[in-house]
Picture 1 (cartoon, rainbow over the protein chains, first blue to last red):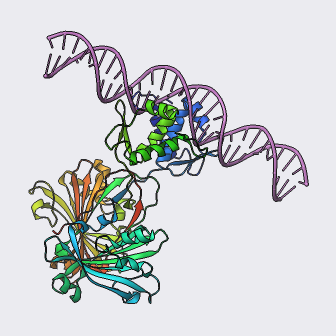
Picture 2: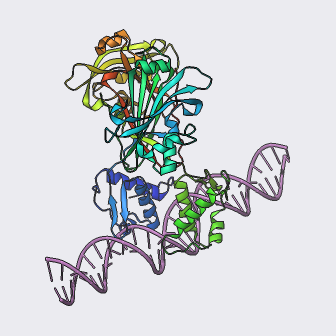
Length: 258
Length: 258
DNA sequence: GATGTCATGTTGTACGAACAAGTTCTGTCT
DNA sequence: AGACAGAACTTGTTCGTACAACATGACATC
């Protein structure tokens, strides 16, 4: 077996060779690869070269290594996938930075009466902040919003800087609860009369509804938001990039016909 | 400077030390770190140890390395962010696997006459495939779709298995063109009469419009799709997870008021 | 059969040496 | 001043050595 073609480093060629062998089933998923010493002998290269080649395979998730055990094949091929990256959660609100918020009302609402499904006890009272969002120097709102805060964290709604920072951010700061997951659902809606009035659009006109659930590391939903946008004032844009992230779980976006 | 605490490898302690120094501004972003030889002398460790420590910093994106130049500080701290991962593009079509497609029409359309903006020469004729999507055993369509294929790749629309695989997949197989980026835009729409009739909903009823552009590695848009869904038959769901991906660019989702 | 000890095997860490490959700097010539 | 060649510098690759740390298997004992 000749690895030398003078163009690429040995360890890279070896990594490729091993990757191909794994993909073709020479080494079954779950099985142990030959040891470093065996590869050194087989390919007549140094241990360092073998180690670097295998390290690259671990980096992409094909194999795993344990001291005293050996190198185990974890998967037979890479899975490429598409990924949307956002820097911080404000990026999820694609208008936050260039808009102003106007709070209309803060109240306690029984979960069963909320405009969005709230988890847990239907009798629980969540704190709701209702408001509008405007672009700078514009009269027509681009969003009507309701932010539902779990009662355990409702005190943040009284914070002085409540209107300067997102609620989830205040919750994180005060309670150390961080949104590990954000569930989002987008739908077309006919805007109901009360909200339509506030948004200055005819009742029943077309809108885009965005619901979000903020889930903590303990799988606890601590905040739920609903925003309604007039269709002619807002579209939701996203960009997905091809990525070769190693073997992390790939959550499925799922449709639901409600 | 004592790196030995007997618990963790030297290179890890050194990586941590350098990471802290970078974060505290000892080495400014954009500047070159001391050379390997200088670190070896400063910390009295081997070159291998220095290299491994710095390799770990490159892995998380804090620094970059160029032969003959040195090690440059790229950023002073890690940024956590949120990420949505999809396995494959079919996952983007959140109904593809459990639905059936019915092609209504295949034609050539001048770009200027298309229902979606198409890039390039307005006189160019794109191949369009118009169709409906049904859930298994259901009569009412959940989507009306148009797929626009750049004329350079239009032959795939005649392929035998055209209806079994996504068009972008056929393009990739035949031309080796892969979607590096997918731009997606979601909006609420009032469904126009012709489409409403096909979807068996009243004209003007609320729908969700999803437009997608498939961009190749050469920044060429080779496919554009438009799908219209009755609002009561489809919602778009997504899940974002907190991630600590290293310093890759963070594309912004952006809003547009159309 | 269950448990403990020791030997063997395998990967992990750290050191060193030598040379290759790419970049930057310096000196010379026009 | 600008162009070119060579030297010096810096990282990249490959080899080797030695020992540590962990896992597994073999064997002895109860």
